[in-house]
Length: 134
Image (tube, rainbow, N blue to C red; front, side):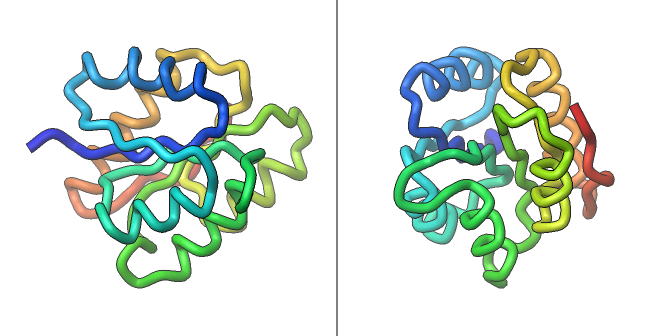
């Protein structure tokens, strides 16, 4: 069965980019347009990995990250945070909140695919690697 990835971003072009990059790699893609929808979908679908944008309506990505890491059903799911902020404080807050990787926009699609492969394979083998910085 193909690994299931939930991507949450309020920008349609980012969701399309993710679909374009990840579906040909064999991933099943789920999408959410805000943090609240991401949490609800993750609890219902139990994806193998989440990609959360920081700036989203209703609930931002960091709040969604903290909610997901506090729920028994989702706490072990690897999460990649996407941010347009170049500030180290944002990266540190994401990592402290439980992010497994943090990518700064604009990011390389190759880098995104590498992080997803690393985290999905780590989950399938029983653990994840330490958070990566990009």
